[in-house]
Length: 90
Image (cartoon, one colour):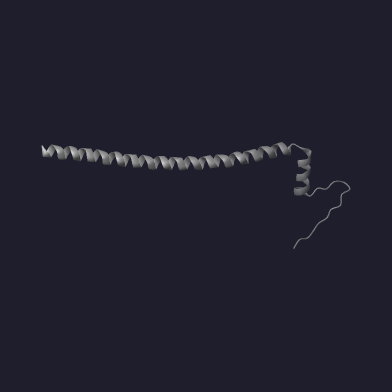
């Protein structure tokens, strides 16, 4: 009779330890997945903002003023009758 009680206590103890171990491992896995999800959401937000900026730039690039601005800044073009002023900064 004592052996039966000891064996059932041992089995219940082993089951409780196994369930505790499984629960802890699942919680660790869930926390890791949440961290990865948060990281992916942050990346999505950054990419969405960058995409919005690029779409705005595409819309703006279709205007004459933007093309004129790029030509002046990058290519050094000037309008007829304008005087070019070059400053030397040290």
